[in-house]
Length: 264
Image (tube, rainbow, N blue to C red):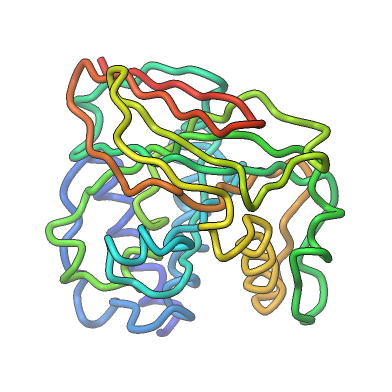
């Protein structure tokens, strides 16, 4: 893609998000056809959106890191996106249901970095990224199907638009996470007190930090760095659940705690 095409794609996506209009197929002249192009458009979208009221990117999300989500979206590899600071909440939050086109929730393991990741072009591993993690926490990712037909759009356009992300609720951070078996810890989601799904940490690429290693490699290969203080949503252990007005959502990841969201 030319710089002009990248800029035009980001402009169209940003305009659709700010006007709350559906995102359809981008014109062929500025449609990313692979993930390399998709992340270039995403970068430009972040720069353009920062001045629009959404704020800077304060964290990251990784989608399709578990079999349940890969099967649900029919995408077989992880996909990354940014999370705007204005959409981040702590512990429990209320959301206006009408502010979204088709809002859903996911049950996530999240981390916050205490040191940078992404330098060089080596292959990161679970062990090599663990030293950069200062906190682990439960999280609800809020997603929005703002697409005309997400299956028809394909992964590159979804990646360019931050892969469904519309915000998150971060639970209380756990500092002494090294005592936890992050592979075995179970996670549960309830809506209005009824369990709607469960999974475990190991569903995320065998170990939650394997997803972080994947993201660190992606950033390194693109000449970018994951910065200290940023958080990363590592993936959902429960299939996306679409919510109605009045729904109360709670996720509980044993050993990490809870996060809550209510849609009013």
